[in-house]
Amino acid sequence: MEEIKKFLEKENTEIKKLAKNLHSSYWEAIISGEEEKYKKYEKDSIGYKNYFNDKSRFEKIKEFLKITTDSLEKRQLEILYMVYLSCQGDKELMKKIIEKEANIEQIFNTFRAKIEEKELTDNEIKQILQNETDSEKLKQAWKASKKQGEIVEKELIELVKLRNELARSLGFENYYIMSLELDEQTEKEIEEIFIKMEETTAESFKKLKNEMDNVLSERYKIEKKELQPWHYQDLFFQEAPNVYDLDLEGIYGKDVIKASQKFYEDAGLDVKDILEKSDLYEKQGKYQHACCIDMDCEGDIRIVQNTKNNEHWAGTTLHELGHAVYCKGYTKTSLPFLLKGSAHTFTTEAIALLFERNIKNNLFLKKYYEINDEKLKKFEVQIKKSLQAEQLIFSKWSQVMFNFERELYKNPDQNLNKLWWDLINKYQKIDFYRDEPDWASKIHLASAPIYYHNYLLGKILASQLNNYIVKNILNETDIRNPDYSDKKVGDYLDKNIFIPGKMYRWDKLIEDATKEKLTSKYFIEEFAN
Image 1 (cartoon, rainbow, N blue to C red):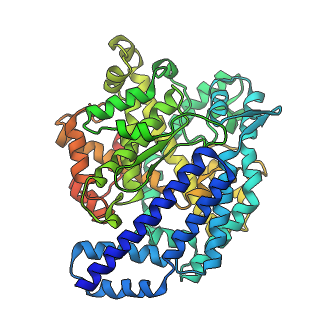
Image 2: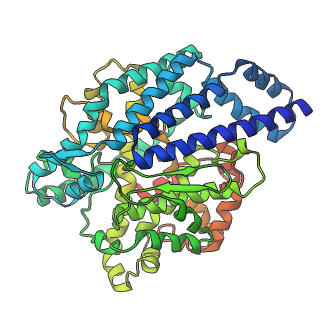
């Protein structure tokens, strides 16, 4: 139908222009930390949301969905319907939400922990947590970082309430439910996956945690019952502490950018142009984490990092470039702008996590970090255990975030400090409590709401893809040490995951690519047995 075709052509043109402006202003804000850049980003965010507030176009979309028979038209209209619905609220309310989001994000991105009036970057705090053995110094560093939670707590609760107000005005129970449904997920299906993951990994994690506590208590010369959150070498115990006598910093003490670039090239996924446009190293005021931004869906893809030559950034570089090659794949096509993107948030996370795993792959270490056979053999058991620990520990951290965020939106007036530490005790088995808003120090609650469960879904899909690739593309049997430096891997992912973009819902894409529905059985086989 000509009317639908013209409508979609115009929508693609206008939305592409708005998105490009928004991504550009976000890039400038996070790499500089400058207030005026954040104000520009805030203004562009409001303009972007306001475009979708148009009720007459929303009515047309609903009408067109009833009559179109073309699959590509229908998919574009489905995507438009969800975006327009999310923006049908009061403009002033949406403006307040965006302003508060931008303000909180700027606070996070420019925050630097202080110890005795000395400012420390996140990288420096991580170094203290990983290397210091004095419990008081560890506690001091941990608490210094958590100060950002105290700074944003009040505004963050206000933001949650504003988001809920918007969701209820659109007919949803709360913002959490709305976000899932407009992202083609349901609370019930996510909950079922998380419950199964908890049940099937509980014993493995219990055993792992006990082994870790034995090593850590000896390291810090305290009783196991005295171990506190700052003893686990990470601000949230979302990454595995080094308890396996594994000299990872010795292994990764070389150019992690160069090693990652070579790996991706060998897999048939060139990243040179991406790295040339990226902002890779620390500077004052800059966003301290890492992300990937597709600026225009035409090939301008960039990553932001604060790179150091260590294990953390070796994995992070592989991770962010995983997002980037996904973007590069769908930009190669002639798909309309609305269909250029990942099928779902967790499908791009799956690719990033799949490639990130290679930092604990013997073949990868031998080839890209020049670790000799003798050293690999020495570390073989530790590397395997370390990877398993990473996956299990993150699965438990995901449980904390999933359940906390869900309860946060159900009742933001409850005792959130108690809820936070109760969940940490339940899932991470850390028996600790203090009446401070430590939960508010997790940036995702402000800047990436209702997102965290997708990391665990991504890990589940990464295992499913790994199983399929190893057995059907590489024709190998060892699912724990596959050689991904093979152009067949890049070709498979390009054809089956990247190039389709958003043409299909995530469930169809996964079933087409792996010949079965999303399942946690491969993750459990790899890491919980």
